Amino acid sequence: MSRTSNMPSLVDDADVKQIGVSGKSAGGSGGGGGFGEKLKLFGSLIGIAAAIGIAVYTMTGGPPDIGEQTRYVVVKDSESGEVNTKFAFPKGERWPWTNRSTGKRTLYPVEACYWTKDNQVKLPPTYVILNSAMGKNEKTICPDCGREVRGNNPPPPAEMMAKALEDQGK
Image 1 (cartoon, rainbow, N blue to C red):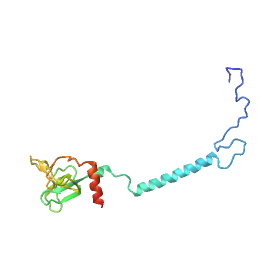
Image 2 (image 1 turned 60 degrees about the vertical axis):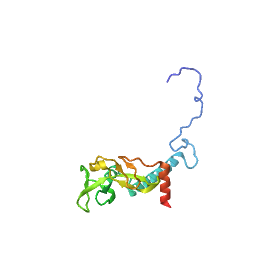
Image 3 (image 1 turned 120 degrees about the vertical axis):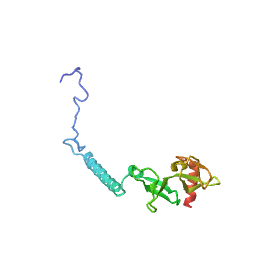
Image 4 (image 1 turned 180 degrees about the vertical axis):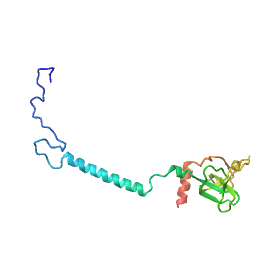
């Protein structure tokens, strides 16, 4: 190896010891609990934490299945007024869907209306079948509050919804 300078470097005469993986100097006596031992302990703790995390994840069923959640819709029977909040609609079939209890095709998707006549928020909401879903060309009016109900009906302001949730918990 050639040098570009004739000047000695700072490490030429230094007493350099090689440091091993354990953190102890080669040939020297290191203190107890070297770096390697600490690394092994840390790795073991990470492994245990990962195993616990996997076990909890498996026992709780993991995250919700989005595909499964989108198979359900809230429906209302147009004749009886019965509401089903978790109707698994048949794939590829358009409403009205068949009500299993009557055998009639009277189930329609609904919109939620959270208002009362005195402009308060109520829970649970009133579920309303849109007239357009039933092929009628007229506005849909909520039977409870008298407001117009539209597709993707907007909910009340968040503060009012929070108060209604709080009141419901009392």
